[in-house]
Image 1 (cartoon, rainbow, N blue to C red):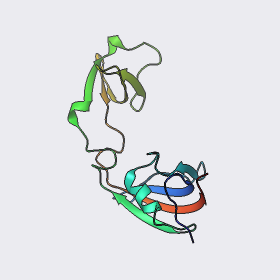
Image 2: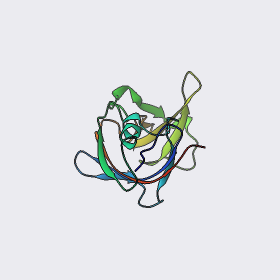
Image 3: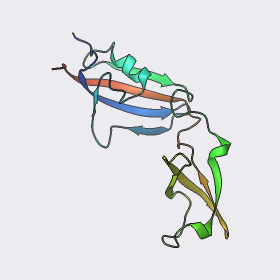
Image 4: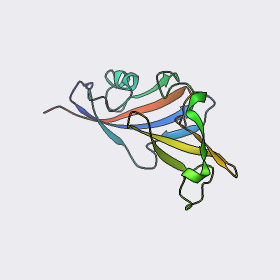
Length: 145
């Protein structure tokens, strides 16, 4: 049987779990994901694993935090004066905000605490600091044209 190569389109099912066994993502709700090999659409170590798989094969790939979403950084936790936020909707823990950085790029922040004068927001990815295991199943390979 064939294995995928650069330019091929692959269809994969996967689940993502943390080191403590929490399921934090996957294709179980939205169905298989389609990826073009060699386009940087998925993490390099996942793509490398797919290159050796045949249709129907399953493989677990563990990616350490540094290669996934990085380590948690305290400098990405900031205090925002409530006066700089719109009054509605009222800020609540778990809400997300988009903020422009000095270089003009956007950063997503998650509100973690709301005080009378300030809001604490975290710019870390929710999975920062987590080693992740991807349970992969190669569903289909469509050869490059």
